[in-house]
Length: 263
Ligand code: PXP
Image (cartoon, rainbow, N blue to C red; front, side, top):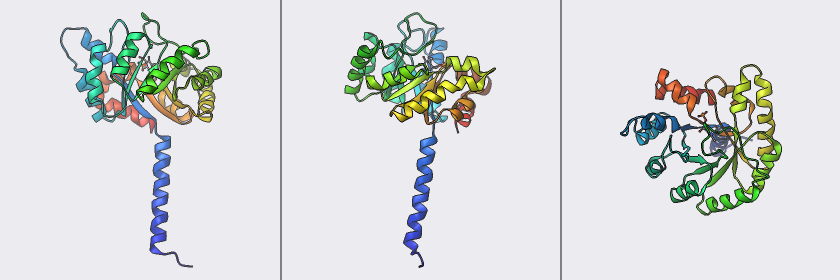
């Protein structure tokens, strides 16, 4: 029987819709962490480089999110930077940090799309491990309840260890962010062993309904392997390497180079 023109048209759109959905499913968003830009600004008086302009430019150059990590000593992004950034970020605004009272206050007053909870000690050079989601279960539950009241999506920074992934689900987070510092260290010599726990734990996370983000020490060398091996990777947040690469390639080219690794 001959198919009608409308049937054929319907099939064509259905196929296109399936392809579009598959592309969305495979997409990993690049969130640029602009802490390092703030560090340069803070090294002198004044407002150069202008953090708000840099965030806008990152988005114009293709970044699909902006991440900031205010720390108590404000050596990077300052607490006072957050309201203006919250106003202008038009992609996805992610505020990460240790949920002490000051941090939580800031996030609740300037609700971002996502808040990533990180267990970093006040004076630490950079985040170096994820949560023990079992020992801190009741604390995390309390914090997450407050964030959910403001409709903020919550992601929990964890090492790729099954019991902590399951713990993140129990405390009510929507996502986890894998700490990739150890992956980055082991990648050069043992790329397969380095990614194996991430692959395993991402599979588990997907099965129990947790979205998967990743971050720390990701760069132009190790990002593609990670993306290829970790299923359903929703987002990476990258700061140090990306801003360093921008010294050589410029911000626009650098963002494009990172996007290529994720495509
Ligand atoms: N994710 C978290 C939780 C972090 O603390 C950081 C560093 O601020 C990053 C991602 C980004 O790490 P990097 O600057 O090494 O790309």
